[in-house]
Image (cartoon, rainbow, N blue to C red; front, side):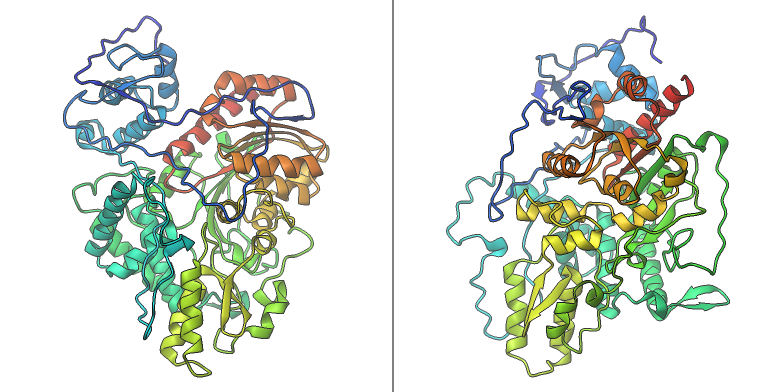
Length: 616
């Protein structure tokens, strides 16, 4: 803690700069009502599915420090960073594990009004060491979809379609950030090309993942696309047990690709910033992953008996459950495990639970014995889930399961190119056309809806495969529904892990749900028949909160309290909730590897919950 008598002298070496951090509302509990909406404005603004969708990612500034204290921020009250910050602010960062000296250095460099930027800088300091801190930088990115040109050249292709469905004469005057976005895209393409990837592969990866995606995520996307181009996801029955365990041609192929990926990431890590090791996911060797990715056990698993022991300080209750993308860099998983009591991650591919892949890692302290699957059991193949597609499915499309869902879908231009290629070809089409079409179908999870006609899955079909009820996300714009679902838990997978709570809590549970999304964890508990007495949900997206509220109103009788800003969930507020509702039985959450600051909030909040529970 910081002594209240400690004083610091703050120096300002530059002009004040207003903070660009988005203003987030603090949503306090609104009393004992069964459903508590803490947003002061509960009005619904329904959006047309055809409306354009602006980027919601905040535009963060680059912070390449040219010298000590050269960039000065100004808070909303007009105080520049030449003035000392409140001791409570310094105490908060010290409580998250940073040293006083590190916090002082960070505030002197960029001020303290932009808490997200400051936390990112402190994480960088912590990762690279204080001596090198003056040379570090944190890049801010702008998320915006950029349409790329496919490298498959069709004869007489006219190309009059504009990308993303925009009209040729649409006004681009509002795109002031486009040069910055293109500069960021060019830099990432250059990095990927330097790692040995082709420029068109880099372009396609950025189109799939977005300009704001980390280099690590782009590398993983390229290798996933390469693996999909050579072999589709196989049935569980295609794996065979050898003296070394599970094996298959597809597994060996993916293993070779991963080895190549590791080498290239290691080479990339030897550059100017190669020593950086943090949760930002931009650098580092990729994590070794088990093959097949079946976790500690499966509902039908009779081949293995896995046991594990947890450190005493990690034992529940409260139980905690944290998800991250499996193909995060090794240093990311190392830091996640270290921060969560050195617990070994459980890596699971959801294709063993449903008809679509989703490779995730879960760090948790739940028991792993006596698990049970959600009922009814979900379909495991495309035709089991959607038998009507079989009518138009060509014999040369051998897919039985879908790949991991993206947060965006193929554009009309891409769909039209596929149709033109098939119409101009014989039946069956030449192998070159087959390969092009299959690469696109695997990359975008396209299904056959007519003769020579493919289309993305509908949103309700994605809901079904994810384990959500029909129309769960209805009420927000079409493209936002795809994004919400692409970022969500796979309910059947999570439900299998959470099933151990049913017998432990016959009278229901109190849940602290961090970064709730559209409520995958809550839907899993509901489908398990576990009553949720109280859920404190922390979720910044208004669309996601709207979806969760709508589902809760229709299905639940417990108390829901929604909080938009995780930073407003202070230790005192956590203790107040525990005093009001009783202890939390489950702390659940999940993020992608390129959101390190929020992960540390998860750890901070879990620590506060355990501390407050111990005092009861």
